[in-house]
Length: 254
Image 1 (cartoon, one colour):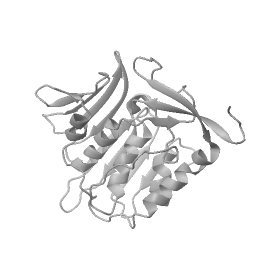
Image 2 (tube, rainbow, N blue to C red):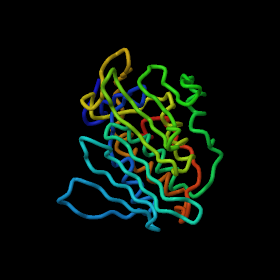
Image 3 (tube, rainbow, N blue to C red):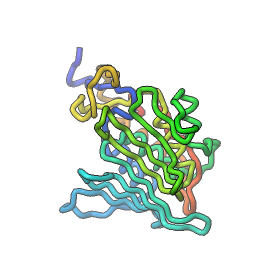
Image 4 (cartoon, one colour):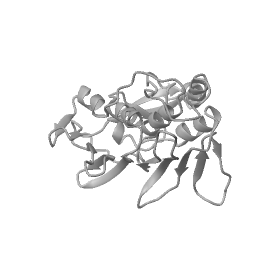
């Protein structure tokens, strides 16, 4: 039984690419509090602007019904051209957070450099001579555009576009791999805002499971994420290093 004072109803959603956007604070608050990114203060505008401590990376969140809501831009460095990535408004925040976590991680790790590898390991279907991969439910296509070298992740339900993620040709490949690793993860994502923001309720595509979760788990999830990222140490001041996305083992890891 759901006791309002002690528990909250949480919806676990799989596959995660159809879990809806989630709370933007999952990305913005850790960047500010754990990674030292500064933010502008313009209360008259419905947008968020964050910049890295060395002013080389910028994250912009701005509602755009006709385009990408999230835009991540990085200035050119000594050995790295300028690059950008962008994400549609329905992109789950946990997938975007995999990219920002990797960007700000000060310690290199052994994450692979081929964005297709996590998809292949998860059993996704190669198409076009392995130039693209399609999810088992046929709702996601991940491909590298040969003409430009950029990466495109497109989610559709039937003929209806749901969200896209784009990485230009100069985006560090380990960031793309961090995204596809999070995308291919079979663990469900959890939401506390019910089913209103899910892109589809079709039971043939989405598996939903409702659980009563202690309020304390939900209330402390973001704080625990901030603490975990802060414990990694100072953010890098030059080019980013590879890092896998944060694991999702319990409701404490929103």
